[in-house]
Image (cartoon, rainbow, N blue to C red; front, side, top):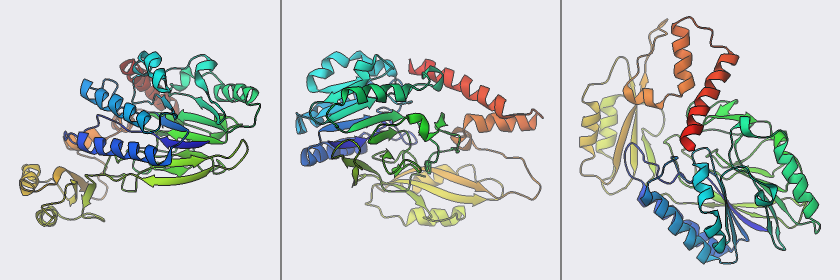
Length: 385
């Protein structure tokens, strides 16, 4: 079975209020070309199709048009899409029936096993599990589905598991305020909780492509096809996976996706003063389309018009200036932290809550942190629905 594994498209994502339709459209065109060239048996999109629970009509049209083009590039191919934590699960389920005419299966919520175990005739089986909050995930659910797939797999065909989650031991570089315990609001699972019996686990959620430690070279995040933040300063790609038969090691090749407007940080290493950063911005080539972030160290505060000054320097350039990333020099014994509005927006809610607790002599222990995460997830779950 030949598989094209992709995830985390985040269609509709804007970068500091800049529209990214141009880059997203280019990425989708590359996706169509890859399908046309390699003719996979299965196309797997492991969650986070959209960046928000309520994508605009234009963004949904971009997706549906691309999906039709991907199908037309290889009409015999099966397409399987699962919801991620950024997606509305109900939106994935609404058009299940019409999509099946194009061999597209969309899984937004946990369903009957028959709908989540998808047979690719003569090729293999895909166990497609969407993102669900851990409170809604039945204990041992992955293994139950894999056991049912094994019962049907009388010919020794490859078995693939799809999931959108955080697995312990993954490299979460590029994700803001992530830790070994939680990334992007999803608490980490132990790899054993995915069960056994699959030949390849096609994971979504982590944007840095990788095999997960302890997964015996068959548990993989394919990564996002284009970067979502400046800290995702690594190549982005999709994964082409070949599995000869059940029990065989998957053969994985990366196919890089070219971003038409890269995310550039100045200086490329470390930080500099605001005056030197302005010089770097002034000298940036006029004819290169990019998003620009400045890494600036300051002792106190930047001038009030710093953002406007930087924007003015790019007025006649093709690049788009985004923001000044402030690295504040701290005085010894000074534990306080003043933040700009931009810095505040970039903070993880639990970090802000922890800082508030510290300032008010509240013991923000692990139990309280877990309650906070659950309350935050309940709010997000309501938004997703």
